[in-house]
Image: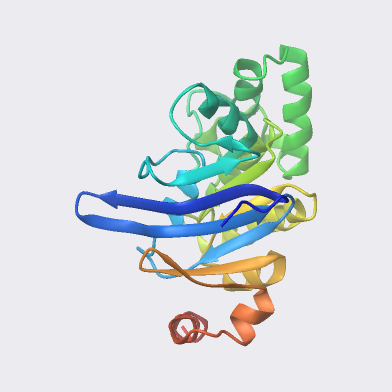
Length: 249
């Protein structure tokens, strides 16, 4: 199958194994520029591994092929180009604890994009305002709530002006009352044209913001469709069983 002309991300035959255990089984996927895709499924289904392969945080089988904006994702000089275009927001924030919130957001543009200090600071303050925590700029991550730290992590990812944002269960480490503030920021982002691939357990959020929803199980893409197709009229019994379990929980 050829890459679609409009695909920003193209995945072909993606296979990933740990020893004898295969985590991903020959996945094919195209994601268009500006598309918001939510990936749902049970724990251990390969969701996080899939998005970590997109920027090669996980190595994958040599015969597999992933391209981002036409650049093949593989070890070597091109990987830095891919990573400059792909922002990642993790479950566990991964902020530098010894640096202020402001400096956490300034760091990558200065190192990678060679922004000047005034440019990087102006941009960082704009982004902290955009995610609703401008008043926290001089604090250190340890002085912030989990929800605030995750919003800093989103601002940090946006500071590189990426074409793609990958979210690996960004609310799963948060206390329940902090989930909403992070999802609100992500809802606003979903309307800005940035391509987003979001691994999430938040079914209401996926229904609301996604252009397409992917249901994964056992390292395979079981079903892909619009939110209405997946949540209201799923074709596959495995999808129906999963949704019954999580929505009635």
